Length: 153
Image (cartoon, rainbow, N blue to C red; front, side, top):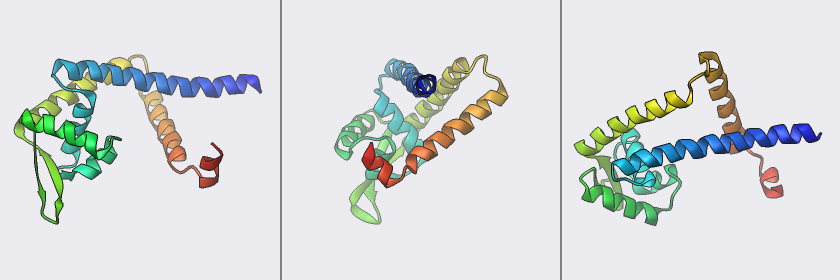
């Protein structure tokens, strides 16, 4: 039984390490452009979800709305985004990219592709598909963890 536990732990550890190293590489690149990783992530999500509410954006980048407000203030001051009142709810603000923000996101995509391709060197196309499928399955299993198991953890 002990070898199985080590194998399971090593998979979780490897996933953690790979995610940490990807994050570090993107943080390094963000710094080159005078951005923090949360700013970088906010720009990417605003690009994916044009005219997104701050509440929805905070949930997508896993931060609280107050922290996000500061992130968006800095992006707005740099001319990368604009915020405006939600026509359906005057209490809510929406964010969208300005042309300079779009340009930065396009550049970030290229950097992301380069980091990804470098990380995936030596991994066959078949293994990439298996890995993506397996990680998606693991993510879905964790998202759908039964309530009684969550309480035991």
